[in-house]
Image (cartoon, rainbow over all chains, first blue to last red; front, side, top):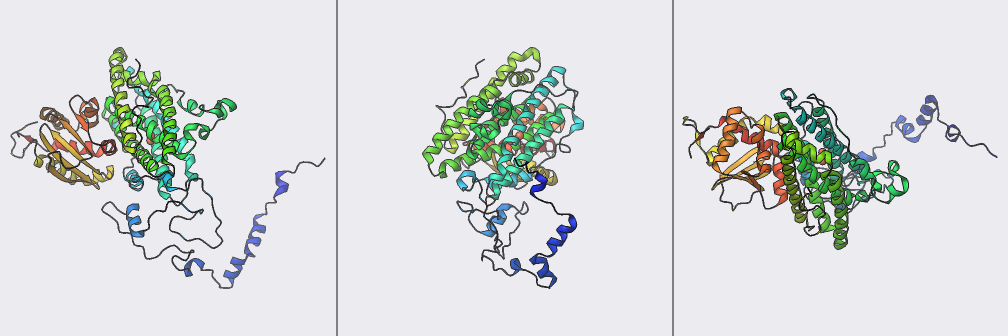
Length: 393
Length: 146
Ligand SMILES: [Fe+2]
Ligand SMILES: [Fe+2]
């Protein structure tokens, strides 16, 4: 019986000297040594396939030079389908460029009418958790309020990880032709990182500490058939039916989850007892509202442009049903979420009853805003929504 | 607080809101740091309406508003509640935790945030830090009697 081939025998790695000699004997360096530059890129005519365009002169607007300004200068409408290429939109390609198949190539699959301006808005409204929060002004809170805020922020920290972990792996699936979605999602991942950072800093800045981790992340990977057959620890996010296509991810994360988190951030601002806590929640609220704005406008674009509109609406309804059930139980009805908010809202653990009523009123607002957002996008779930009109307590 | 100072501007009035805009544009670097802001906000002080347009990095227009010109969303409250909010800002230099715009409209008992479309209302959240900063300019704009 032949002995197994070791990896080192499969491919012999040259020494640095051998590699330098091999490279030096290749056609291009040889040609250059003879004074014969290639200049394919230099001699190509604009639009001939090798070079993209020429003479484009984007003019900065009052904000600076935005992608909208660049688009206006290019004057080329975004096509419905991206090519099988790694080329940036508008670029030519070297003649030997190999095709690249992307997973997501259709405009209807990723687009939103406000996508470019939302990306620019996100860049312009960036902030820094280290310097832009007046940490030196943080004031001590009564111990039960500090504990509740630390629990609330621990839960929110997890939620931020969840958003990044679900969204970021989609980046290499978007065709580079639609750079807007790549940029927006990369920027969103950065927003979520900053949210994780700011909540962690707040937890550790005022005499409290990290609280109880809840089962949200595990439960998300645990949905669907894969979790049943492979066991919870081995399942990847994309095996969850909520996250099986970009449309599903965007609905589950941008519309349902982040819509709810936006309400939670507004509530955090409302509950904040110090200027610093108000400031933190105001900043994260802005970012979150931007993420929700993409989700809402993408849903609208999807419903209006998907090839089989009726089938897509049906599919999104089915997904929404699952997402609503999931987030209601693991989020809005989780004791650590309900009670940390209620202690803050009631101004102490002794007044939790009053706090629960305030929490319920926030929930009603969240539900109304969610239905209104998706209704505007063309998805009427007023009769189907799995978020009950009232929380059952 | 309502004052008889010579530089007081009657509240509510378009000049009073314009004075907020002037104070904001005097502090342009702060608003530039907060980032672009794109919202047309209706403000109802009892029966009086104002339409405040924010573009690029600040407020570009303040006008009387009868409710017919489009806005993204509007914030409405009785004159006494607006006065209370402004007095708090003037005493403290900034809104105290009970008197931030988001807290007041989320409580919803005295201040209401409304709009024809949720996406318009969502702009109030997207640009909230700029709007909060804008209303806090009230610390340097004395209110006179309407
Ligand atoms: Fe976030
Ligand atoms: Fe987010």
